[in-house]
Image (cartoon, rainbow, N blue to C red; front, side, top):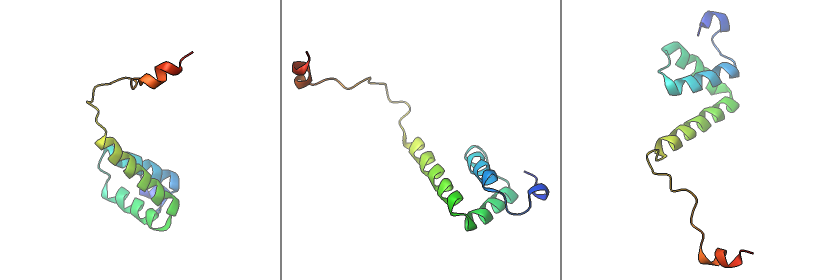
Amino acid sequence: MEPHKTGLKPTCREVHRLVSEGMDRDLSFIERTRMRLHLMVCDACTRFNGQMSLLRTAMRRFPFDAPDAGPAPLDDDHERRRP
């Protein structure tokens, strides 16, 4: 990101991009600083940052190596109600 083009405070669109990119790579000191300045004054981007953090935490806890069990088996009661 080129700070001289966009000024010190990035737009919401830039912050969304930085939040997303920050999940895949380490942001530079300037990128982190600009993002934090924006988050201090923008509630919407602060919420977006929190939502992305929540999704990241949930995905880390998701058991990717669990075998796919398929659909849950039907109980006997369901079989009796079939036409």
